[in-house]
Image (spheres, rainbow, N blue to C red):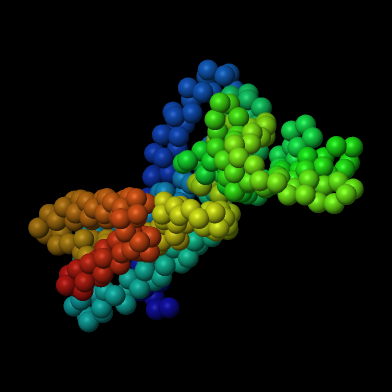
Length: 356
């Protein structure tokens, strides 16, 4: 790497660290005051508060890193403009894209870093934060969250396999129950679904298989009740929300839903969005490049920073709108998750070419 790009990269990393630290501080102040009421109400220890704040770090970093790249890049370019370095580089024929290329590479590397971070680290940390909040701060009995597909439950002599829980329709899809007495299989119940009615789960239809010494006998049934020991509200309390599932768990959960004939665009958008949102730092760098190149003699420094931050704000608004449309099924997930990145990234690059 030539001396000039290396020097610019060093200055950029300093400003990026300053911007990231500042944004993280504001973010943590919001988190602190948000949880402070619970800490005071339940008289939680400082150690529990520290664990909660520590578990919040992965999500805080994922949320603040794109903004830090936007502000850090703007600070770098405005600083170069203020010191007339950009004018000097243009005078000797040095192209800005050559000098700023390492900055773009850092944005790209950060985006690549955020892919596994968003896919696995953030969901696990959110689950840990939930446990700390409910068990350590509120003093509730800790309940292990599960994705609630292919779950075994036992109540009395019945042992049941629940293939999938549809929280929207409050139905259990795919039930297999075994009635076992004295270590002997007596009856196997197979039902495509069960609905919650009169404080009990009822299967509208299904098949009962009777096991005895004379042989196996099948008999159809209608509106058969099952006592699973779980109500829909209890399932909702134990069911791991999609935000706390790792990317692999979420994809498996979506696969189980499709096997039951269900399709959830919001979950497909959630899964793809974790990958696409990882590229926000790179997009923020591209958006900041054209607005950081200003003429200090015209007093454009603050105006350039303001325009860059405003354009970044438009990017987030546009991304939120596209994601919302995709979650509601009005746009394919791939369009809602990736089109805003392509549009704003292309606009930033074209405006930088014009400013250069």
